[in-house]
Length: 139
Ligand SMILES: Nc1c(NC[C@H](O)[C@H](O)[C@H](O)CO)[nH]c(=O)[nH]c1=O
Ligand SMILES: CC(=O)[C@@H](O)COP(=O)(O)O
Image (cartoon, rainbow, N blue to C red; front, top):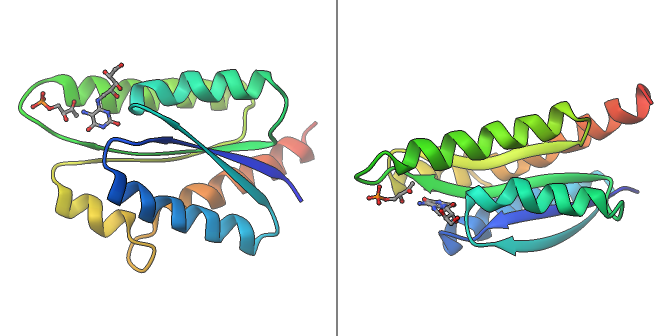
């Protein structure tokens, strides 16, 4: 059994609840443990993962959040920089699945957050599980 940390950017609570439900279901069905911590937004997720990875308390990580386009360029920064920083951590060998949705509107986010529809939270958890398997295989 591995220990995963779900790092959620709790900007849209009702959407996060669905994403976390899907992620936890995927982890539990694979026999793994899940804990959840919360940060304000997607820009804080990579830093929180980096801090938690440094603690050596967890085997893998799932980033959860929702970034919905508003009126300004800020969407590009939040969506792009959180993804870029998470990818950088992945390239450092930290097993991470990225379940941060980046959508044009809430309707698109709802379909992707819902475990009964596109289940992006479960998808991110499965990615993290696979990356941990590879980290163990190549260590
Ligand atoms: N607009 C969204 C944000 N913005 C907040 C940033 O992520 C960050 O918390 C702030 O800039 C302080 O550093 N975050 C989301 O997760 N989703 C959004 O739609
Ligand atoms: C993704 C965002 O940062 C967004 O929610 C902010 O909205 P706005 O660009 O209208 O300030």
